[in-house]
Amino acid sequence: MWSGAADFHALLASYQALFREQEALIRQRGHDDRHRFILAIPVADRPPHLKACLESLYQVCTLFGYGGQTAGTWDRITVVVSEDSRDAANIRRHQALVEEYRQKGLQVVHFGLDEQYDLLHALPAPQRERLGHLLTTQPREHFSRKGQAANRNLCYLKFLQLTEDRDNTLYYLVDSDESLCVNRQTAAGEEVVHALPYFHAIDRIFRSTDTLMLTGKMVGDPPVSPSVMAANFLDDVTAFFTRLAGLRGDAACSFHGLPAEQPGDAAYHDLAKLFGFENQPATFAYSCRLHGAHDHRACLADFAARLDAFFFGEHLTRRTWFGYGKGFTELSPARTVYPGNTIVNYAGLKYIIPFGHLRLRMSGPTAGRLIAAEIGPRFASANLPNLHRRTTEAGFADDFRPGVELARQGIDLSDEFERQFFGDLMLFSTEELVRRADVNRPFAKDLIEAVVGAKETELLALYQQKHDAIVEKNRQLQRLVFEAGHWWLSAAPLAEALQQVRAFIDNIDRNFGEHAPAWRQIQSAAHRAERKQQIVEALMDYRAERDAWDSLF
Image (cartoon, rainbow, N blue to C red; front, side, top):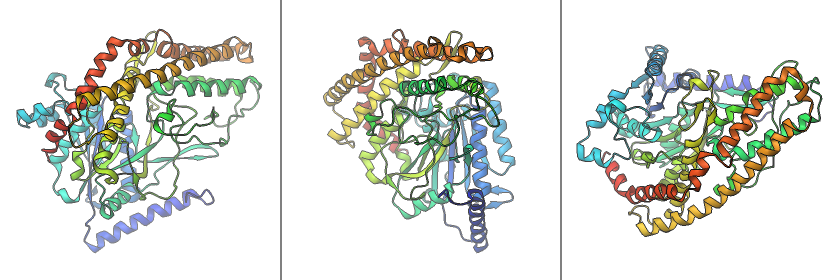
């Protein structure tokens, strides 16, 4: 089916039908010892994303039929929508979606703010106090926007409440901006398909191995902040305009067809070398998404209209595509938790994402380093990615993204950029600590301080290089588009598109230029000292907090 040499859709239909036939035979036999699944979807003010996520679950259940149905309801799958919204209207929309998919046969429950607060406060006060950094200390009247880590960890309390059979239940965490489907690249462009038997494959892995925690990657939009993609994105935008300059505006669009080279792992990341990935080609070509007859002017207009999506996490030229490889169930040791695609058994509930109170990015890779050091290959990765979509057709205004603000003067990434730098500092300090110390014992303060100090020096140099490169690349793009006299400047219908390109260049300068607020924070020794103190204290407290958490199980 994935060879590219056969009729994909005919084989996919047969493949799905075989799973449904197998399920009918299992029901006929009358004995099913496979796992039950409880899924959690943390969501904060994202109705369009939640709808897409629930729809994908519905499609996987319908097409592959895991566990079968009783009276029109899928028996072995329960879905918890864990609320973290601030907007009451969005909460109502989430509740309506829960009811809509209940009517379709999914067992969906809405885990609301009051219920979360009550469940948290059902814990004995001393235990709750020790877990404050892992869960939350926010008061009832301000219990929304707790952050993804706190909301996800509260889901674990709900898991405990819903579990009827500890030995035969798996817990599946899915982010609201992810869907249980994958993308494949065709001559006509990207195609989304429900082609992976997620529940069947995951059940088999946990029944046939001693895995405690399983994670799958993501395809589609990059799983990183735009603050670490600006340099390579500017390269690709410049390459697009350079090529466009040699073409006629009224000529048929030539930005179609499969690209000569697919982006590899972390091709979207400016600092991919930090994560052990090799250099990628300098640029990747843009693939036009318009269909039907159109010219280069139409291609440019559509390209310009999508540029600001970059600040919300899209990358127009370096998306990740699904590759079948060796199948779904072959495991490899993991070192990064993908929070929106992680499955654990009951024993694996102990291995959470810590440090949520710091609100730093890179929390999944940081947790992954700690977990891998503790349980080794029992923390595993499989080729079961989810499709990651930063934006929906509803547009930016109907999607909350922490750290990204739409302001009158433009888009502000300051919060996300600052959290990215110190998230990187936490990650690479943790990576070094687990090499030099026993993760099962408290980390020594002097060792933590020495490691954090050394990593700070390294990261400051790398971020300085990246900053300088972005400033220069943005100037080059400005000159190429607006000062070189190219044909688009005299094309009146492209006036709006050129305004959008100018707004993009201005937003890059606002967020990454010499006077960018986040850059000034990173350069501030006083601000870094405050953040470093938080990081040192969090790492010192990690073992005690884990012991308190483990006591729940």
